[in-house]
Image 1: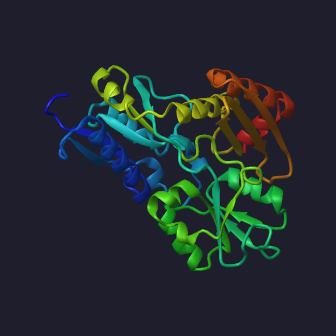
Image 2: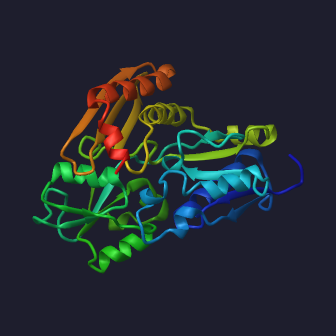
Length: 311
């Protein structure tokens, strides 16, 4: 490695900075680098600037990654750290995911002072979430509840909850664990009740495709098991052409040499849904995910996703 400092592009939210600092620490430890060999370069993204409206009204996926990827391609940074669930299924040409870190807990956390679980909330309670996936699954489980848009970083949402703006919210447990905020968790939702977003809990590290030295450095951080599961889920999402207008969930788990994938697509009202489950060899992760997406499309019918995307 040259004497030039490696720059990591990252969003400036507390969670994004935690993830970028984590990657920095792993790189330093893996290669015996000096503390000043890797530095962070916070970048404000479109998703950070749009704070008062649903992101799906502005294109959804990619709004938290676009400016960071532009900095990467312009060689203003050498590495980009993303929450994998924020990444579009098609990466910008010239970039590649060089490492996927060991995955955190994939489950969603339920947070409320009004009940110990979704089932225990009083009739008509208001659940805040910026995720259509969570909103739709909440409505499927409890049609009487109100599910509303609820923007902001983790700390902001917790503050709004304390202010009584909503009665409950759902957040990724992995993010709360990374920020040391699990004391706020009322209960954890099992995945058979609330299927997570594709790649939830996973951190991806990208670089320029032609930057061989950086790719080699990052390869030491890659967790094959997580990368395999996430590749299955992203292949599923790619077949569905998922966007923030489409409530889609997917989870691949590997145990005893078998990959088990579960996929789900719903309408925003949670009144109609289609789900699929497939198993196979981990080596066929992408094929399992892609075929699951195609089969789910066939189950839902040609107009289901088209209707959702047009809203």
